[in-house]
Length: 258
Image (cartoon, rainbow, N blue to C red; front, side, top):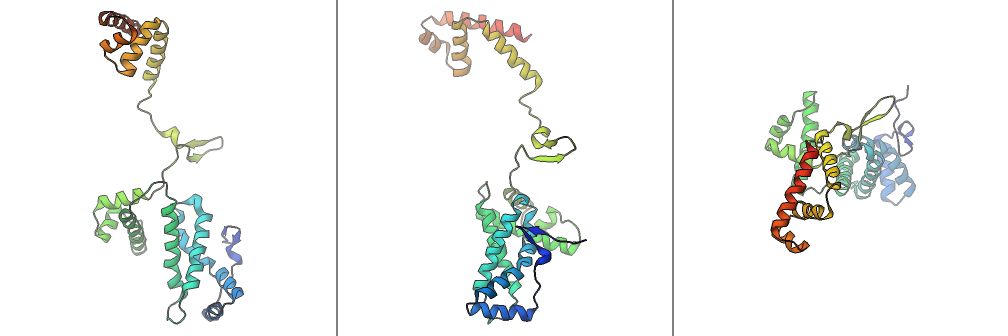
C-alpha cells in the first residue's frame, strides 16, 4: 500500500529525491540566475516543508494547506538567501527559515493577541516538549517541560494556553451514524436551569395581568433602577401611591410563582 500524502494537490510519492551532488549543482545554477533549476530545487525540497509543518498541524489542523503554502514561502526565502560558500547543508539553513515563516503566519492569524514574551515561552515549551519526548520516548509532562526550561510551571501553562486556538461552540466533538455531537451539547448552563426558565414564563404571565401603570412602575423600579420618588415624579402620582401599586403588583407576581 502506498504511504502517500496529498497536500495542496501534491502527491508526495511523485516528489523527486536528489543526491547531495545534484542539490549542489542545482544551487550553483540558481545562484547564476537559472529559474528552471530553482523550480526543480523547490520541487525536490517540498518534503522538507512537509516534515517541518507536521509539528504545527496538530495545533491548526484546518490550516494544513495554508501552513504548507507558508512553509513554501520560507523555503523560497531560504533558497534566495543561502550562502553556498559556507560549509552548511541547505536543510540545516532552511528549516529555521521555514519555521520562522510559519510562526509569523500563526502569530498574525491568531484570533487572540498574545504578548511577544508569552509567545516566546510557548514556542520554547514546544521545542522543549519535542526534545524531551524524543529522549524519553513518551509524552512529556508540563512539569518536566517547565523544569527543562527552568521556567515556573504556571508560566508554561499560561503560555501554551495563550497560543491555543479558541474552540467554537459549534465544534463537532465526534460523529455517530446519525448526527454530530457538538461542544455546546456538552456544556451546562448554570444560569438557565429548568426552574429559572419556568419562573421566567410565570413572571411573564403575571405581568400580562397587571395594569399599564403597574407594569410601568415595575419596569422603572426593577429594570431601570429608579427610586419610588423618581417614579412618582415621572408618572405624576405620589410616592405613597407608587409604593401601594408596587406592592400589589409584586403580590400578583408572587402568586404566579407559587
